[in-house]
Image (cartoon, rainbow, N blue to C red):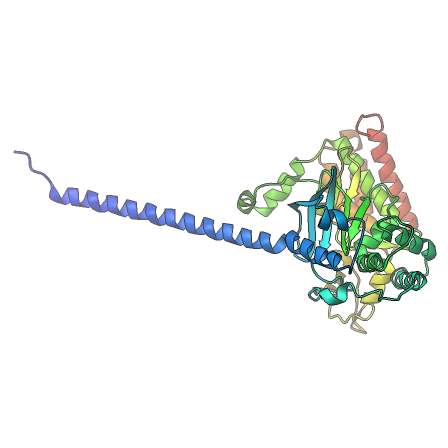
Length: 423
């Protein structure tokens, strides 16, 4: 007779039960973690992307006659200006791809009050009543021009033809082009002028690398669409982003770039933009967040500035920083890379920014240009880039060195690509 081992059968059942419980637990854990990640991502998205709230605030003010502008009717009445994909990285600065009729655009809207730049502090919550309180009823056009002139003088100093800049603003503020600026249009223009990026865009409107202003409504403004919204990299689904180590991600970004001649053309565009804001007619502007994500380019590989919120007038930054208390140089940083020194004898920040715009631009371009560079110029290109990165504002004859290195880099790149179709 055959004898059955009851103990063996029982142990097999126990093992099967254990395996089943283990798989059930792992499945539950995967579902729990996945649900938590989705919840966190959704919460982050709803906090970052508040286009509906932005539109409601602006349109409420428009419909009650507080503000007006060239984009108001399309946004709030005709509804032909649409918010598309959200590009916001901070809740207070809403950025969306937009469609205005048949025109591709970018929509920028402020969810908080534009405050004076400060170090390490966030602006106070937006005060809806106070935001569009100037100019007040009864203000004449001449008085408004004086207000705008005074604002420019405070921000830019006595540089350039400020009266001409005032007239440019009044022309832009006349949204319906009827030859006069109404009080609601003036309120919109005044709110926009509190934004550093808008002021710089107006000053540089005739420059190739500044996106064109298309329209405005309140402190919401619309610019031309830029096809590629980062200097390099590839957009991945957020779930994949979570699984990729940051170091590998940075290396991977460099794989997804245009061909080298096209990269060279984009790099020349950045060097030209640095020239545009270096001691121009309205003074020197400082780039205080030199990031690849703030730069884009169009389908012809012409550089376009995507985000200029941290490009500030040098005179304005000096005024902000001059009485700042400090214990070390780390207390004297604005944005991510506008640094001054801490005067230990006075425990105050000095006013001279250490690194010029060109040095920061070259630091950003170093890996971008050297990867895949033609062998016959690689050594000279590397040499020029390191000379550029070493530039200091405090160095003797800095302006001469600045011009020499900038021209050397542009000439080196242009000579190499001038005979190609990419130029």
